[in-house]
Length: 261
Image (cartoon, rainbow, N blue to C red):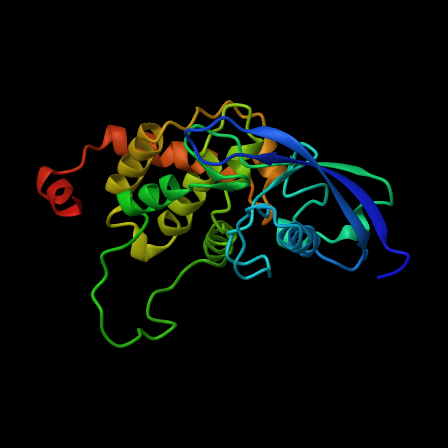
């Protein structure tokens, strides 16, 4: 590790949601440019543990940009300076020797801090539970050609389904809106034939849950699209609004609404 980078870290430390937090300075020494950002934090934490101090808490799981567990605001940018990249995929070659790096958690009332850089994103789970599913019968797998889907629709559905639910869109939005996340989860089902039967109930219930969780309104600033590690387009938000308008002008039959609940 000789000849590695030395960095100055300013990290948000907070015991829990009920306690005030503050920024604390740390040194990251002899850091290889081939390390990921989370590996750099691992090195800092190892030193803190050896010194008898509490390590910096942060979330991670797959460390392959798939699960969406990692999520840190780095120098004011969710997931850091590299576009289309999660925190765990960000490498230290994006920084240089002597840099000061400011590290914070996602900032949103709907994402209360658990400790340090870890936030509670269960509000996303509750939005999914409100309607992000289809009530399909189980059984043997249907033949691939049994339900014909236009290529354009299937491509758009796959683009929407790429959302990993990391919350970067919320952290980037000045309004802390969850519209990009919610619209992606609505769109990938609304575009496919299997999701159309429950489309009206789905969009209504998911938007209502999003508002209930305390996320802000979308004002089409576009920061969410820029911060999304999967580069999901804000076209999804426009589609969600169209689906919502259709649902408003075609009320859901009461028996179907009851069944969905």
